[in-house]
Amino acid sequence: MDGDELRQMVGRELGFSREDRMENIRRAVYISKLLNRNGVTTIISMIAPYLEMRDYARAELEPYVEVYVHCPLEDCVRRDVKGLYAKAIKGEITAFTGISDVYEAPEHPEITIHTHLNSVESNVSQILEYLMK
Image (cartoon, rainbow, N blue to C red; front, side, top):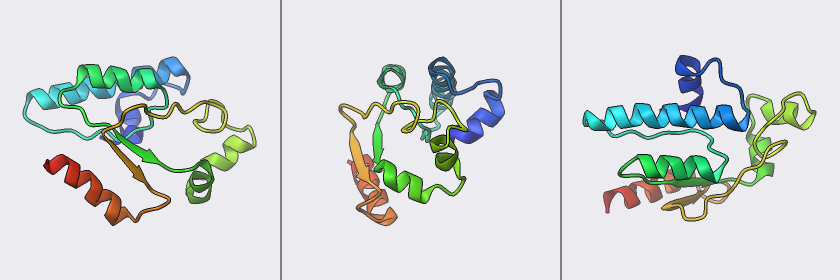
């Protein structure tokens, strides 16, 4: 489940305040629970910058595997194909994770991948190895 696509379908009215981001996570978790109850394994790919968001998801979803995609801010800016970081740096976008809003790094993720150090293939292998245990 992609966070941007989810917003387009069930979260268009939400902004990027802490409260709106939390509501977006609640909706993603709710949809995942519905799918899980019907035998569908879900993967949620979205920015969840606050510990309380990830704690909420962990408490609600079973099983739950947190994958911390670690990427230094400089690399995020360099890879930014949408130009959002440039706009945030100029102050054109507010509440932007890593620029004008915090990102609280996970305390105990099951998996940490380093996108600035390893290839996509290596990172995917690390995730699959964990899931196959």
